[in-house]
Image (cartoon, rainbow, N blue to C red; front, side, top):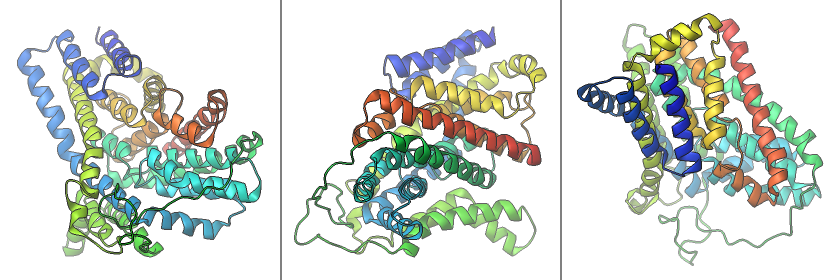
Length: 452
């Protein structure tokens, strides 16, 4: 019966979020409560599971998510993300347009959400395609897939961080596995964009005159005036620091392990994800050409980042509630008995996340919900070592990119901003996300042969 209840719970979440358009937080919370009662939990047990699931999950990763989004806000509004884009273009060359746009999307989406990243770089994709007199399709699809790759596979983006927190996976190992897997997926995605998508002609349009607001205006909505026009964006080295330093510190802690002595203690402290991202946030304060205290206010860049993070925090907390109730309802034993003989291994996380992504649209919701479902089954599936838990997180990320279509807001951003009709969007972008996710899962499987 627990399995039947779980299937009904997943279908209910999909129905509420995809068809009825309910907020995922409300859907996850209500389904968790109904599932717990149906599974025979007492009122006291249910309340304790709700409090523990929400509190413990956000206690592990809430601050990490908020700090990551705050870093992204400073990179975006200071012009740092644009600096990174221009530098990558300089390395690659403006003639290899799909390659350039795929790599730009990959870099920019680590600190910046997919939707914002596409809006930020879409004018550049159109400009390059127009200058080369080629179809916009190759550049637009490469950009969209590049953004999706790092959004689902590379911390410190919120989805992988949340999944790692739910499964209690070592974030440094998630990064170590996520980077090569994501680069493999990126390479195949760029190949798909340049060899297949680029054959469909989409007019890049005429050149537009765009008024660019100040890079360091404390209010993102502030109009361009003589006082705040034309401020200098940060250089490439400075713009890279808020991203690279936290990643290096987290990975260094994982590589060095728990040795004895002052050096190990210092590395362990600085490599703690919360501390590493806090350092990254302080480094991001160096990005504006003229720092102003109002950037840290409720109406400034930090305030906007807080509002952006609220939804993710609530969904993550509700996912933690769902996972805790599943764990305490006895479903681990039931599903373990059913699945242990099939040796699904790292394939099951991929399938779970892919089903949820395709059904309800959000990669972050798919990652969090699938991780919550997977948590009580980890021992039965043989995913108990640190390496296996990290690979499970990356497999969830791979599944959460399959398949972006009409119920995903990012699908509409890509298709509408690049001038694709829906049929073309399904063929090029939805097809591209299928290729991306399956390639990433192949990479996870190859890693599991050596490390799991």
